[in-house]
Image 1 (tube, helix red, strand yellow):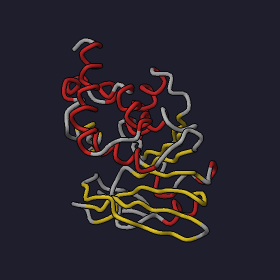
Image 2: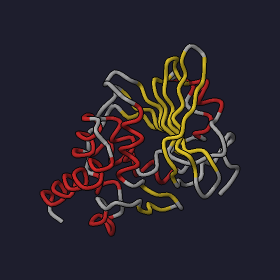
Image 3: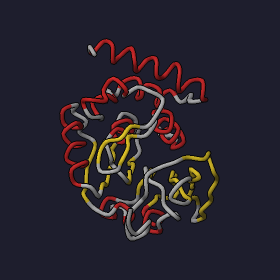
Length: 217
């Protein structure tokens, strides 16, 4: 597919998948129109990159459905000055979207091959405000905290305590919480030391593995 066709596919993705589902934040929409999602999937799946579904990226992981990426991004309410922690780099697409809206993204991945590939794509696109780390994401990345916002792209049984501790006050954390099959996408806020949670919608994510998540796949 030619570059111009990918660009048209991105525009169609926004018009047909995002706008009808109440994705209205202009910064989120601009990022979704701009970031070349097809570069974050395997060559054999590039023509499916802008479809309304998740896609496998290897090692039992997936790149999330475009709508879910946009929904989680919009929920953070980013203005441009924020420092955002992402848990679960995966393909790198969610971090790339965030990098277009906030000041800096810190992203942690536990699978080395995925992180190496994501870093290659970030560098090729000159997304230089993304810092990467190979580690157990459920422990966060305390060296650079606190973070204005945290987004977790895997489903766990509970909100990891280290992430709450590394969240700024005020701050917003988005995380899927539930069992290994279906989760509630939780919108967690910290304000004046108080933690509140509400459910955005039902979702289905890969497992959040680590000290403060599921113990194994």
